[in-house]
Structure formats: structure tokens, C-alpha cells
Image (tube, rainbow, N blue to C red; front, top):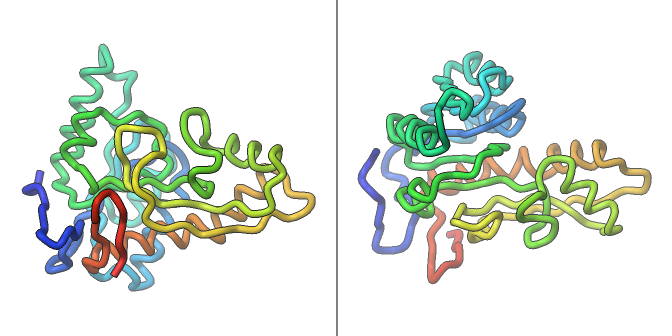
Amino acid sequence: MLEEQAFTDGRIFDGTRRLRVLVCVSGGGTNLQAIIDAKEAGKLENAELVRVISNKAGAYALERAEKAGVEGVCVAPKDFPDRAAFHKAFLDAVDEAKPDLIVLAGFLVVLPEEMISRYRNRIINIHPSLIPSFCGTGFYGLKVHEAALSRGVKVTGATVHFVDEGTDTGPIILQKPVMVEEGDTPEILQRRVMEEAEWLLLPRVIELIAEGRVSMDEGKVLIR
């Protein structure tokens, strides 16, 4: 693990070297692909993907990583006798990569508290709603969009936030709204939120952090 960052001006990263990014993902990895695509398009010049970790051996995200030349690692709970052993192996896999930033891109695993404490303000998550709406325990994947349509909202979107000990409760970094259209199904709305918000927001936040433009001030995020 790299030395804990503690910049006097509150910045998460100072931008003087390339940001080491580790991505954690459970499924297909569309948000991971958005990061890979942004990198290939030259939009993340000061960041490098150093490892992808999945909790599922068959996750397509691992194939995406391999195709992009990024190391992929599987740490599956079923391969360990108990949760404590899994958490240790998972944290070891994270530490080995020496990340500056950990990105949760559809990672359906509760992080061990030790990891949150060790990487305070260096773990970000993408959530498919405008937090504080439709977030917290039980709100993930299509469930978020089902709830939004059931409530009848006219605007939804996505949020990138820092991870703390709560569920979707960490400081918000960026949000992007997406209009709900007549005739939307949860699947259609999910796709639109991905295309119009998630796949744009996540690479943008990584880029801002890599450039040294994100800082914390009394629990709130400032972008320079």
C-alpha cells in the first residue's frame, strides 16, 4: 500500500504523478469499459488502471480487463471458510496493487471496515440515481429504476460519491440528471442512465482526481 495521502490543502491526490486506479466489479463491467474507453481516447492521461478485482470468477469484467491489458484478479467469498478470511484475502489483493484510488463499478460486496478506514476518501462508487433518492440498502441494479418509475419521478440520473461506512452515504462528488420518458421500462431507463450519466461521470471524476482538482473541506467535496 502506498503511504496514506494527507495533502495540507485537502486534495485527494496532488497530480504530480500518474494516479494508480484499481477497479472492483461484480458483473459485466460496463462502467469498467467506460473507463477503459476513456483511457484509450486519451482522456485519462494522468491515470493508469493497475488492477481489476471481481468477486465472481465468471464476471465478464475480467475478460474486459484482459482485452485491455489490465491485470484481473478474482477473490470469491465461496473460496474461503468464512467472511473474515475472504475480507483478508480481498484486502491483500487491494494492497498488492498499491492503488491511489479504488473505484467500485457495480461491486456488490460490502467492504470491510478496515479497508474503508485505510483508504479514507480514496474509494469512489457510482450509483444509478440522484442521491439521496433511491439509494441505500436494497437499492441496486434494476431495483433503483423500478423504484424511480414506481414513484413517478420525472428526472433521475447518477451519482459518484466517496465511500464511507454507510450505504451510499459518503460525500457526493458529481451528479448528472437524466430525464424519464413516457413508456420507459426499468430496463430502458437503466440503459439511458448508463449512456447519458454513468459512463460519462465515472471517467470524469477519475480524471478530476488524477489532475489534483478534487479536495475535501469539512466533509464536503470541492472541485477546482
